[in-house]
Image 1 (cartoon, rainbow, N blue to C red):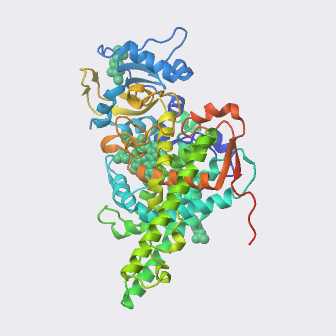
Image 2 (cartoon, rainbow, N blue to C red):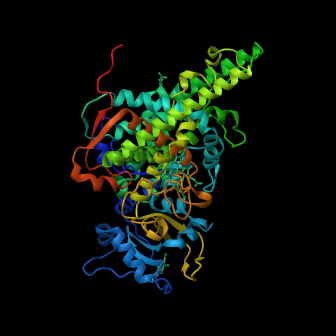
Image 3 (cartoon, rainbow, N blue to C red):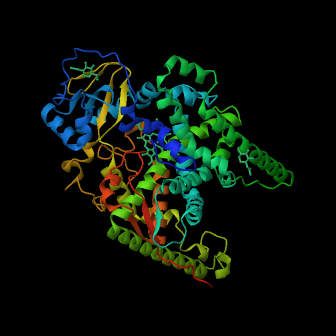
Length: 549
Ligand code: HEM
Ligand SMILES: *[C@@H]1O[C@H](CO)[C@@H](O)[C@H](O)[C@H]1NC(C)=O
Ligand SMILES: *[C@@H]1O[C@H](CO)[C@@H](O)[C@H](O)[C@H]1NC(C)=O
């Protein structure tokens, strides 16, 4: 769940640009937090944690942080050690750095979701769209991703690739120096289409209304708790949501239910027909079907409840991943030499895999398990699929993988993922974070630290992690964009698979991606999640003219 403060898909983008605010992780983005005015009862007198001095003339640490986050944080760390208090993002926060960040992620007494809920009232919205599993510590959405999405990724891959490819073709296509001032909606469509295919099947994923819900639910939610809603009292807002008078998420659940109902009925009809004829019904592969088949295991009560849970998945997945895939294109644009390297890698891997498949076919022919080459048609080893971006191929794109990991390291918000203490927590250095107060992670102390990342952590070095067994999905105290420990993002395998798919298709189909305004390069590379990109992109296809055959 990352934040859309203003990236702008769709027609009425100007309004959304102003009004939309992020959900979930986006809500945790510093840009967003800074907008929310918080009035907290400050507990004074905890002497053990040092307070960072505020620059003369400033009222809080915000300005100094914003001017140069890396310098501000490293200076504080040098002066005060790994744990210090700041007055920042409209809150009093305890910044935790370096090896100590583990303690915040690993302690069961710190909660990321509590912190987000504290600032936004998120839970009132999300629990109102589901009928079961309403307990704040329910792990059901996590388990759905862990048990149903991730293990089936190899099977989902061809569907994802097909969907991303067709969206790319229809939204960008073959072009020569085509300027796209705001490419974000193109990538939002790609990701929403891929997610909808995985979550609800390719038929429902064709429905434009459903795709729009996938994309816009995040914005609508942000709007509900955004600037216009700010003057409302929480009590008033909360009762409105609670009594269902006004919950922007509700309408999106209804969209999913309406689109799913005929499809589910048709699937039931086919299953009944098959069973009448004594045949096995082969259900389509998607999460909707898996939840229908396993509803009691997850305590789900009806289709509306299932769609509610799917919407929670959408909130966690679509915006985060589409933000990252938009960003990936800016990184490709910024480093054309690396883009060529990625293309070369892909070509080599595709050649190699095609060769291996041919060898496999020859072996089977020799063994006599298959009689002729034609018998491979429609099977796993169908020669027509030799050059597909299969799960095997994506897995071997190691340069693409480390490129993405390095992008996430390089760009990562310097202060993020705040956690609220559910009871007094004593850190290993003896300092106490009292119940109700919040710790925020000093991401820079890990990601911009030469001791952890190797040379020149201020530089983007896409091959930094080559040969190091540090893949983009491997979370650890060295790589925090997905969190670590029990609550770390279960969707990262799907997210990275989709990002690699987008990257692979872009480098194979486009020879050049350029900045509309190259002077905005650094600003784009370090853009906050959900913030608008400062400039557009110019795309040029590898084949600029469609060959006529
Ligand atoms: C680039 C994309 C993504 C990023 C950067 C991201 C990041 C995160 C982070 C930082 C957390 C919180 C970890 C913590 O509490 O410490 C999280 C939680 C979560 N993410 Fe993701 N995520 C992404 C994509 C996805 C996708 C595609 C899905 C679903 C398929 C997903 C599902 C979830 C869920 C269900 C949780 C809650 C886990 C829990 O509390 O147990 N995320 N994500
Ligand atoms: C530092 O922050 C914590 C909350 O995280 C608070 O309880 C404590 O009083 C603060 N210490 C000082 C000296 O402000
Ligand atoms: C698409 O979904 C909407 C909203 O759920 C529904 O009203 C509409 O009938 C669907 N369209 C098609 C072609 O199934």
